[in-house]
Length: 112
Image (cartoon, rainbow, N blue to C red):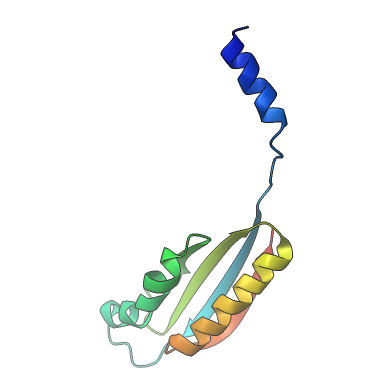
């Protein structure tokens, strides 16, 4: 065994393994007045533009992509603890309610 490999193996013992926690927030929206998919995308521009750029979040439309009257978006969050993720998802959900012009019909939350 080379000295470099031995040092690498020895140094890896000193670093604790951190298992990230994952939280998933799924929001089902009701839309009114969207005549086409372009209008629908415009309603949700802020979801990707604001929260999609956050380093601890991933944002995607996960269902109802072709429907004009509803949309389902999922936000995944990474963090060090379940409590931290829960607080972060609360913050994101509240901000979405204030910023997105669509009624939220259903909210599903899961911490993995």
